[in-house]
Length: 345
Image (cartoon, rainbow, N blue to C red):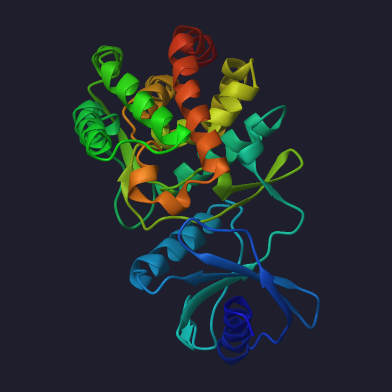
């Protein structure tokens, strides 16, 4: 029996013992950033998404993340229903494996292909509903945070300088590493202009409990509707405008949709309708925060040194798209802000 088959056998045993799910089939599921995922089919034909955590995982934090997802569901956010263990726990540990189980989202795809058409508004409405709900989370009411903490130029400079020092000690050995080093140098050289651009932000911005990792891979779409929001992080305060921009101005969307400023406006309009408490002043900051955040980021330029095994062709393509999208956001920032100003006033 192969190692993978042995793990699937353990998964099947955990499902039967702790969840009273007797799987007729267990197969490898969509890959996760830090987890191994499986799909199990039971005797009734239902499919279950099984997330297996690494031994190093903080299971307490993982439970809090799942509880945050369940809280979001109370506000009407589409979240896969979690299956609790027979003892009512969100995570089961057995056979050397810790897993959580959720209903499988049938017929859905991630938003990795980018947004278009009515998906802009659907995503904006879902994120607005999400933030409206999480603003009431018991871990803390919304507050204000300095804008410099949302797009931290000083921290970005430190990260990029450290990265370039490491590349100097360990010269690039692949075309992507050469590109990543040069892109880091370009990004570092552009930080003074970034700092100047960010001065136009209000001195303080809203911060609240958010999803924490609302990337295109964690948003499931079915047709022109949002089918599910997945993979929450434990509750923490961050800028909701950073999170909104991260998903609706995903690099692949920005590069694939020449009309992205209009799409952004559709998303923001739907967001505002779902979350009217968010002020126009804050909604206007979305494209500037998105451009500034990318300009201050060292990801994934650091991956060849931090985690060489994570550098796949897909990650390389994403890294190049991310770098190019930051340029596009910068070049069309005035246009995007004018479109939002017309919408919000």
